[in-house]
Image 1 (spheres, rainbow, N blue to C red):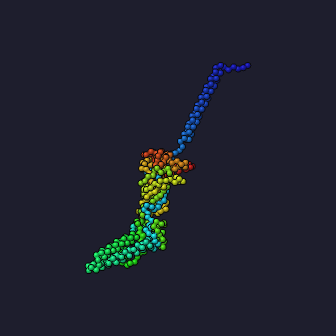
Image 2: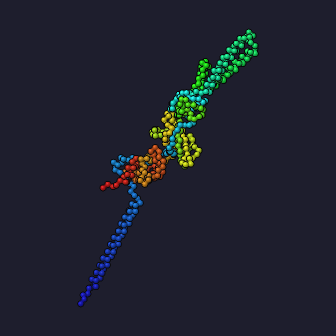
Image 3: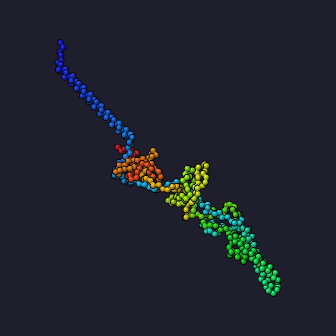
Amino acid sequence: MKRSIPTTKLTIVVVIGVVVSLIATVALKSHARQGESTNNADGRKSAAAAHDPVTTVELSAEQLNAIKIAPIGSYLFPVEKETVGTISFADDLSVQVYPSYQGKIMRSLAELGDEVQKGQPLYTIESPDLIQAESNLIGAAAALDLTNKELVRARDLNQTNGVSQRELEQAISDQQTAEGALKAARDAVLVFGKTDAEIDQMIASRKVDPALVVRSPISGQVTAFAAPVGLLVQPGNPPAPYTVANVSVKWMLADVVESDIPLFHLGQPVAVKVMAYPDRVFDGTVSKIYASVDPDTHRMTIRSEIRDPKNELRPGMLANFVIRVQKPVESTALPAAGVVREADGTMSAWVTTDRHRFSQRVVKTGLRTDGQVQILDGLQPGELAVTDGAVFLSNMLEAPPSD
């Protein structure tokens, strides 16, 4: 015989079961919502971490001593082109000293590298032309002496009717002709560089001086020598026995790329440095832009005149030079020690607002002059930035974390 459960008790059991089920359902949903919320937050944090890499560094008081901080300012950057050239003598200030007449070199009076003055003797030659001119001079002087004596005698005899008037006039004409011939002979010898005193000495001694003195036409330095004793030299027949140059001005010849040709103009200032004087700058100007471009290298030659009053530059020296091709440009600038080239090739700088925490900033750089770097993008004037020791901060990013 089955025992029946009272209706009231059965109802209470059912209600309790429903309540328990509802509580469990609510708990599960709440737990699910909490888990979903947690997952979403973690996902957002992960995404943010993926798109916002760590670029901030915090320094201790001791580490701050390794850097310098200053507001970003501006700098006047000259627009320049830099390339390499070679030094040479200025051809338009250099003279090849040939003799005016053919002859053999008798003596060399100056050596290679000597400083000479205008008119200073360089060498002498034995010139047949000079010997002939001096012989004519001595003959003309002798003829004048003879005609002078004949004229004196004719005048004396004319006073006593010893000669006719016609003979006296002939004597006067002969003396005047001889006097003109002597003057012409003197002038001919003067052309060879002989002085009046030397000519008078030759006439008095009746001896020719075969040495034709060749003098320097300008003041300068002997830059080439090819005058051994006994060498037969002729006017214009190379090599010249001597070359004298004004060495206070040098040329610098350099080849520039074809694409830069429109930037160069006559008169532009040039600053030159050579390895022999690394701390010196020689000033000059662009003096000639050659007309043609080398078809093989696609470069064009530019010539600059460089002032060298102490004659310190030597032909053949390799020179680095800078030409200012435009007016200076004022732009945002940062010292070179505040800019870092990163491993991926980008340029970066470090900025701060509190002088304690520093943020890395990618920048675009341009010109570099006197330790200043032009900042084209990434920084604004007035921002606080690291001006020295930026590489120290970049290295901290790469350093492994300490245990």
